[in-house]
Image (tube, helix red, strand yellow):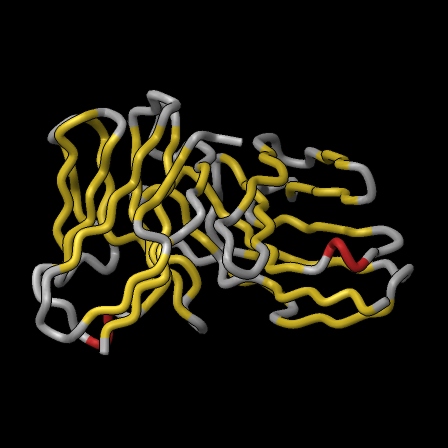
Length: 113
Length: 110
């Protein structure tokens, strides 16, 4: 199994509060991704990173920001959480190319009340 | 925008039966991956196919990539309760990275 951890695994927060989710990898892979998974929508890409300090937007980036200061860590921040951001968030990594096979972390279940 | 349609969306069968799930698109992909996801966990890679017409076997699971690299199928022989899960296909080669289908929810009843 690829060495990917996510923290926290579960979080309940209130509307309007900031939230940061962390993804940590031990594989030294170049690409890292944040997805959200919702019933009826499948996996949707939020943001991705192609190197330290190099990030770009995905399909559903509004309301989210990311940072990558080290190869192994990719942070997802909800500046002001809304109920529509209640979801399961997955981090993924891939080795060399944007379209390489991706390996997923265990997920973070976020509930915004 | 590339889209992947998976069918059926839901499938419930008895242990020991065979089944096939499909992943179809009008777009060409450079590769196609199949993942299985269990409740409360992240998707786990089963296989990657890259050549049109390619067939890969993983124990009782057979994966095929269409000749035109627009579609794929997953066939399970003698399904077991441990095969229960959400099966996702994902196509590579697009400008937006991997394109995921919405998945097939498979339940194998003992």
